[in-house]
Image 1 (cartoon, rainbow, N blue to C red):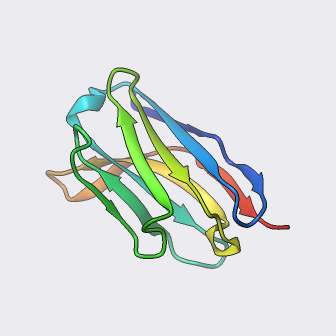
Image 2: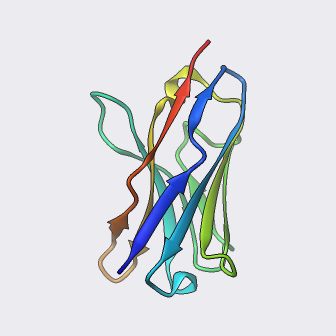
Length: 119
């Protein structure tokens, strides 16, 4: 079955960095675009970043442009989110998700990894 497992979250000070990882299994990873989303308490889920099948195209939310970088390694069935210059407003649960282009939605989600940016 499809599984997405995130890791790499934690507590970091403002201005710091974290690298999130998402290990995928149960499907042909190289055939799907992937996304990172986040959701803070009391807020709606927000799309953070999108990466195409071979990584040639990436898109970011305006709030993270220039600070976050999404990448993937199809040989390792993994997608990553490098987060630099973190701000308190980046605090959220971060989820990776598989993008199903034919349905124009993310159809499988990981369990999430918590990122907290605080002094």
